[in-house]
Length: 286
Length: 286
Image 1 (tube, rainbow over the protein chains, first blue to last red):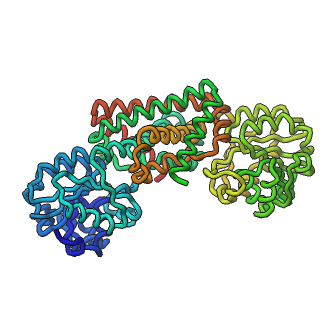
Image 2: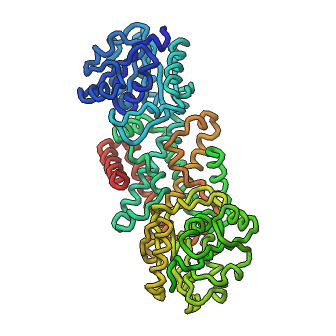
Image 3: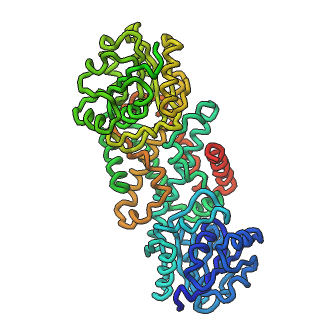
């Protein structure tokens, strides 16, 4: 398997994540080829100098690739994994950027033996989507989760690590199940909470024009991720149902507990719970 | 009633909000006097040049005041309103910075007729607390809610507006009930949500050391306000119980609804709900 700097990296999907990855790798590998469904995305990627070459033809884009990165929504990745096998060059590394990994890693088992599959999930992003929002710096300092299969070679995993580091990210190897459980609580639940918060405000306070004037930093920050791309989030939620539903259940218990403490005006217990939570938050972000 | 620039403003409570307000007003009024319980806070306020004079003696601090600002936690304000009446100079404006207003405005009715009471709630802050964290710029661009009583004169309300504007804030006059209802949903609920989120992560994922490496921007932002000062938040929650409990109830309905849509894999309905929420979020923060 080649060194990253000798590789042609073909990125399938030129949205926020794929476009940003393209720009971040361009000076770190032999060439970056972008494949998008829409010609306009290819042109934007070329114009912004995020890729060396671009095409809307998957087969053309994959020709000569040493590394292929699927940067599409999770369920598009699952469909692509059914079809892409015959088009992948021998000894190529196939990496994806999907936020849930169990289904993807299972689908990767079906790839031909001459391909090295590796699950990937960079823990970064922003609410704006599309190639216009691409920004290679989103990868800086982010954890880049890698979920190798049993069949994934050490060399392939090493190339995946090098790619993450070339982007300024820290690679972290986890099993697919462990990553899905963790992000179900730490990433997918915050999205649903933010959505429920926006829906609550919409129902209770939006009819009052003063509401728009008093929303402060607390509301803005807690609801930021509710602006995430819906297709991306739908795929995430529906391919990570059990961990997400488990996280919701625990969250509902916690909010019910806080509610009972306020209803009962149980000051000592409420203070003790809120103080422990504050301490925990400060431990995570000193 | 004097113009702000001719006023002595006495600020009772030199924490984050009071200290920041002191610093923001110093060049905009005749003098700023700070009153704190601890001598160390007075010294820090003097050292940081946030006040012209400082004292731990309430009576000394109130002498000669044209404007008095109570910048303590809500239930401390309620206690102070019971005792402060005889110490307030004639024709002085008494303003507070408490986050809930119904109880405070009710307690202000008991002040002597020679005093002009006015409820206030600046929609700003940050998680760090205390005079060390004081920063006059937190008021810049914030909405500063004012809740006048029936007895509050036009002149007193006008001075309150001038004070808010001198800090760089936008004054917004609301009834106490309306403000409490709005902030119950838009400020106090986000705090409780953030707390429940931290408690959920603590219960589900904290045992896994990888959790600390993968917490990304979504979790960080949705939980930021869980680091708020506990005494301040306790007072807020317990003096705004009905609006807060109502907001929690609506929130629980919304999260349950999302849960059912995911459980049932009802794609069309889930997509439609998430899209409407995203559109609403983008309307608020384009």
